Amino acid sequence: MDFEQFRIPLGSSLEALINILSDHLAPLTKAISAVLETAIDAIDSGLMHLPPWALILALGLAAWRLGSRRIGLFTVLGLGLIWNLGLWDPTIATITLVLFATAIATCLGVPLGILAAMHKGWARLIMPVLDFMQTMPAFVYLIPAIPFFGLGPVSAIFSTVIFAMPPSIRLTCLGIRQVPAPLIEAADAFGATRSQRLFKVELPLAMPTIMAGINQTIMLSLSMVVIAAMIGAKGLGGEVWKAIQRLEPGLGFEAGLGVVIVAVILDRITQKIGARSV
Image (cartoon, rainbow, N blue to C red; front, side, top):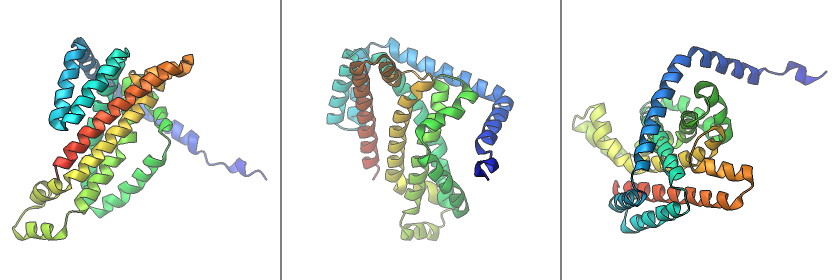
C-alpha cells in the first residue's frame, strides 16, 4: 500500500485559501498597493532630485548627530564610494524600501510585543507563530505576496514586513518582562494606573532592548529587500540579481558592497540610539 495515497492536501488547501483571499480582498490590496507605490515613488523621486553630494553631507551630519563622529565620517565616505560606483539610484531605492518596511514592522511589532508581555495568554499564542515565522526560509515569503500585490516594490515590502517583524515583537516583550519587579511594585504603590506604569516605567526601562529589536528588524529588512529583487523590487538587490543573470561578478561585488555599507550605517546608528536610551 502506497502511503502517499493518503497524502494530506496541505499545499493545495493553502493555495486555494490564498486564491480565495486574493479574490475577495482584491479591492483592498489594490488600494494599499496604489497608496504605497505613490508614497515610494514620491520619496524616491524627491531624494533622487537632490544633488548626491548634498544628500551625502546631510546624511553624514545626521549620522554624526544621532551616532558619533566616526559614524558620520564612515557615512560620508561609504556613500561617496557608492556614488562613485554608479549605484546611487539603486541605493536610494533600497534605503526607501528598508525604511518603509521597518516602519510598518515596528508599528505592528512593538504593540504586539507589549500585548504579549502584558497577557500571558497572548504570549502563548504569539510566540509559536514567531517560531514558525523565523524558521521559514526567506524565499517562501515571496510566494503569497505576488497574488495579493503583484510584482513590484509593494510585494517586496509585504514579504519584508512579515520576515522582519519577529525580532521587534520578541525583544519588546523581553524588555518589558525584564523590568525589575521592585520598580513595578513602587509604581503600583504610588497609585499608577496600568497605562501610566507602562508608558512611564516599563517602556522607558525596556527601550534599550526594544531598540535592539528594531536594529535586528532593520538588518532583516535589508537582507529581505535584496532577496525581493526576484519579484521586481528595485534597488541594490536588483543589481545583484542582474549580475547573477548576466554572469558579471564584478557588478555583483559592487552591489553587495553597497548593501554592506548601508547595513553598517543603519546598524551603527541604531546601536548608538539604543545605547543612549540606557
